[in-house]
Length: 235
Image (tube, rainbow, N blue to C red):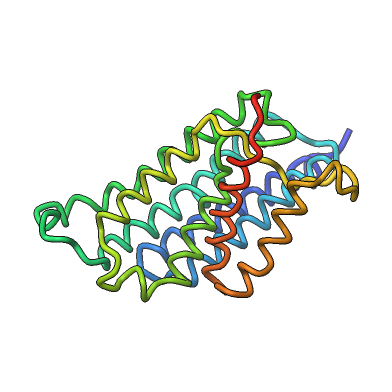
């Protein structure tokens, strides 16, 4: 049986994810979007390695599962919500929304609420062992971070306003809990037949990243959603 130190290595890595999420949220509230995105990405790295480490060490535990969900809701729920909240303070408001300019930013926290719902569903849904039902929270967080950093000038221009941002918050929140099958990028082998969707996703993603650069990550997430819709199967 692994000793106490070994058993807690995955939990320590998960805690690093949580720590990154707290910093990302603070940076987002300060409108330091580049730093917020950086710590979201760092949190995602820790999130990847905590599960891998638990499997390698054979030390998975119920507390680890609960801690992982808590960390994910901070890093991939609260942090992108804080980004959207701060962005609401900077975007233009059409005349009909002027009376709500002090209230509307709080709608951004729908992202954190629906992220928590999505994570709770994931923990109980046995259909999501090899694919996803609804958009994964890291994808949503990466979308908000890269969009805000890469397209900041557009988002704060006269071509965009708070109404569009509100619609975007609602759409992305609902996608988190939608009964929409979404493919996983886990490769069982390297064959085209078994991984056709993943290969198509990667082939199109590369030029998107080259063309749109940092905001290309947001474009990749949109492409992921579209491809999932086009290739969806009944679950």
